[in-house]
Length: 313
Image (cartoon, rainbow, N blue to C red; front, top):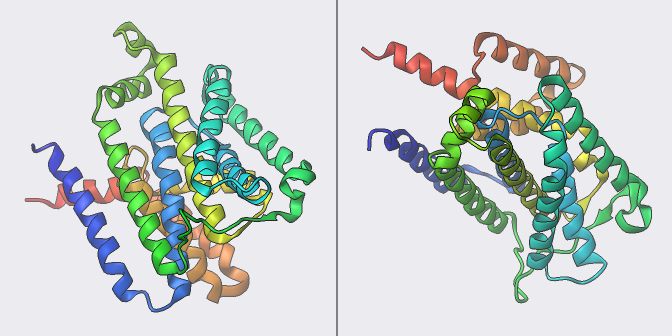
């Protein structure tokens, strides 16, 4: 029971924040920012399972995000598929693709693994840019509204509750996975693949499994993003977007599900706040990130938790 208390408290705190936010959001612009936070957070929760718990770096996860977005855009816009069917097809297709590429890529380690996933992401980005007849190329393409049996979310408030509910489900599933035998196997793989293998853990199987899970979550979030914004470009699958996702995870705290939420919130909201600095926006942004990582090397949430524990009598 004691082990579960922090996680239960985290879930309740997240639910409380979600319930209270609509009362303090003054207009559609703020709803838009919070919805983007939720979509990015879903990606980061899955990416944190791969990086923070599985110990496998990925610099190409925006590729899966972009594929999910384009599957929904093309299937609904060009072939008139129902949005839910397009979303599910995109997630399954990305799952199959990630399963195929996981075995050769995850044989690499360290910098080589980072370069392998980077190359995968770049290939996806180039394909989305070059297939003009299908994706619209660099100009992007419109995405039909998300509709279920004739009903479609018509306001930011409705989208807010949809994304909030899906985020809660993602966090709940991630926490349960972490506390399952799969999660314990992942932590052993992260600690030492040799020791895990000697202990009977099928290292390759679990590395592939968590890679596929994180890719499917990114695809799912990409489909949500496509239908919410109504227009997408290949920039959604760019290398810089992948780096942004990884930075969110590292900033919030690796191996911390709630840290992923905090990192996604900060890096989505902070650029909006720094626009008042005009030409110094990126300089201030970089200084904040550097300061955080210098003085809070574990990330924000784990560092603050450690600080609270040391301050406790």
